[in-house]
Length: 335
Ligand code: ATP
Ligand code: MG
Image 1 (cartoon, rainbow, N blue to C red):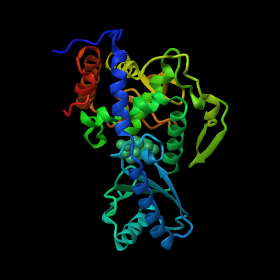
Image 2: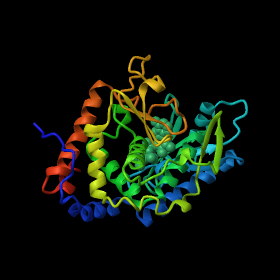
Image 3: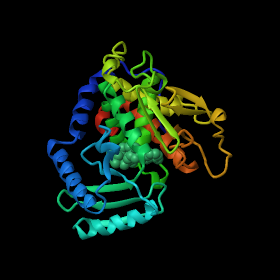
């Protein structure tokens, strides 16, 4: 039986920072990776423009939000007038065009919450998801990217958390665990709430960026170059923050009562959002509010069984960082 994590982290925690930073460096995509990504995007743009000359291509997700590792896929959103056609018809047509142009494993996935075409690029082997007019994802991509520029510890923490989640098998929404996007929001919220704060709450500041998508207003302060050094009073090392993150999710977060909100830079009650576990099919066991689509709970995929797995993994991570002789290895052991 595992020991419960303690309230204070070990005194020698900082000795693990160099090892964790070396791991972070090794996870960052290489120059070669970036140039292959660019080639894929260029050849995709060529195919699309033949059929839809007015379509605009946006990159979103981790290839554009700066949280991408060398294992991340490429996420592309096409912005276009679809006229009388609906997005699904356009996607089916797009899949045909891409097959003709030599892309591999092309598949229109039309039943998903966000319908996409998925394919792989024979040149690079990368997998690529394409959606149509999903501009909320483009907006949240920019929000994440802007947060990442305020304090480098966000990227470091989030890369390590994403790596941990992939290694431990808790980064699979189709199996009831959380998306990469959800983990990054958890990291941002954690750094908004630590004392002294490492990140501000950009949506609570005077907006300098505004975009309205299907009636949803996306507005926040995006002049992040003015926020350099915001978190400088907090001297916590990456090892300490990583422990703090898992400690928070293992034993401090009030799962039954609270929702984490990057939009507000704090937690709010489920009651306030009417996200009590009884409403309809939505389980709301782990509540993570989308910063723009505020009725959307990124934790809704979690069920009674997977919340147990998630919490056990969070607890294991906190205990490993607290007590293990070689936490940089043990923490990321494949499950
Ligand atoms: P990875 O490195 O694992 O590919 P990612 O950030 O690209 O990380 P994806 O799961 O591929 O993560 O998601 C891509 C993007 O789609 C996210 O950055 C976000 O903009 C959007 N997204 C993903 N899941 C959701 C969701 N449940 N609700 C709203 N937007 C989402
Ligand atoms: Mg992705």
